[in-house]
Amino acid sequence: MYRTVTAHEERHEWWSLTIETSGPAGDSNRQLAALRAQNEKLRRAAASRMVIERGLGMVTVLVPCTGQRARALLVDVARHCDVSLRAVAAALVAGTEGEALPDVMQHEIGRALRRLRSADRH
Image (cartoon, rainbow, N blue to C red; front, side, top):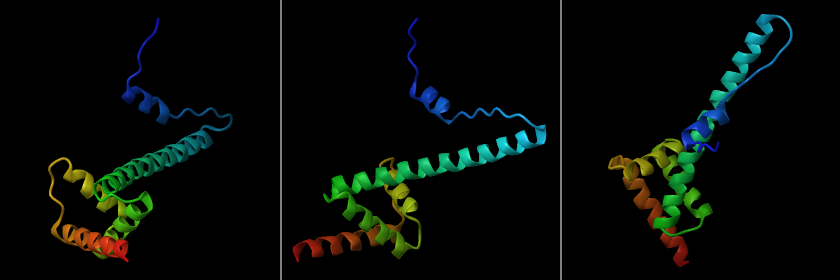
């Protein structure tokens, strides 16, 4: 019988951990705890990467520019706002869901766009 697997189930299966060890139970527990910590770190990194990629995609479509120029623009904004690249990308993504950009970020994005356009003219 054929069964369709939903995206949620695929994601869940992809992140599952199984460990088989031989030796004292304490060693197994430490190994499992280390693997779970590593798994959680990878989850957070993947989620962060997805937000950044989405933000970069938005910039490349809206400006339009290359991915490299979009990254430079967002890095510039992040530096001037003293936040991470992920925070800038997350704010842009949240804007698609009705949230307003913080004023300082909105101002810095405007400045970065003007610098980008100025560089294109020269």
